[in-house]
Length: 312
Image 1 (cartoon, rainbow, N blue to C red):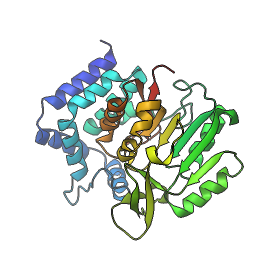
Image 2: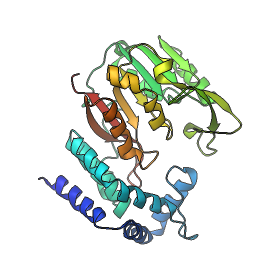
Image 3: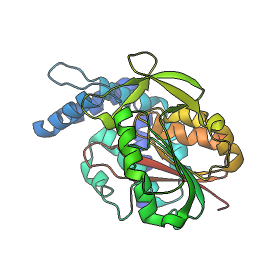
Image 4: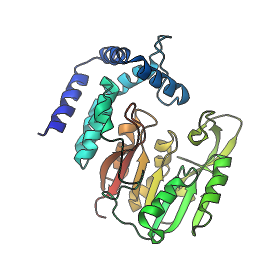
């Protein structure tokens, strides 16, 4: 056993030997010992982005910490499962660093992963070349991922690209930015587990993080990927503010039958750290799994799960 394995299993043992309440109190105490400027960063961040709960020491509001403790206590076996199936020690060490940040506010270890030599979703060590792909970009934003894809692999890397984006003004920028490139279809719809209507939940601080909800003012069509695209898909990138689980459910047939390469954001909900890999594995176990990181060193966001077919 190497030092990364040892560190991981020591941390896992500490979590397993704690009750949920003990784990909560430990994480809360670690937070309270942080310098005030760092605590302010956390509290302000969770005010802007409400994926993980609220946090305010002044108001004795430690909901974000409570949610972390709940997830860690109740999903420790899944965390170990993910660690054991990850294909390389970059991924394993990253998973350890994420959990250690959650529990001990370890910024130094996470800092090792804050820079990358490759584009966000296109790690050339994992996917060295592509050609004639049918690429589906779910949460295409203004086309930045498509442009990174083309810069990484060239214009001959795809034969068709589908771009899904829900926000109207962002959608118009997307079409404008990618207008020079051929064979791209733009779809102003949400991707879910079934077809229907859904509503947009606007984030006043950042329109790029608009998400969907069950009721509201702005309605939009929702589609299931298995129904919306009938041709064989070879590559899916997904970053849709917490709807990734539902979208993957709606792509079950594509994943089971065609085994497309999957580049999935897994940080919008604590449970997604393990839940999305388990879901993909349940549909098709012919995948190798990796984790890569493009966030900062304070709180782990921008975590990408790579699911790469074993036989490709």
